[in-house]
Image (tube, rainbow, N blue to C red; front, side):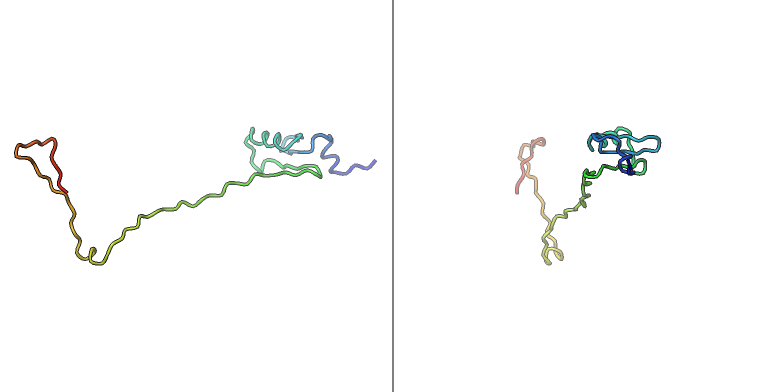
Length: 108
């Protein structure tokens, strides 16, 4: 009987996912279990080699796209005459004959 390299890489029929680390090899039933192992030991892609049996597929989740932060500047409508001769807008305070300093009246 001739065994190919792929057959020897996956010695068990029910474990189609293979994770090769520097010091050991592990087989898994599904990709979720392999991903848990990678997350558990905080493995980086350079630390392992993941493979699967023919007929199976390793699916990597898409990374969320970085959104550019938009700065919204308020639009200020100004006319030429306002720029050349600005009008001062202010409110005046008017006090009663009997001073009530705590509650002044505002006139618009």
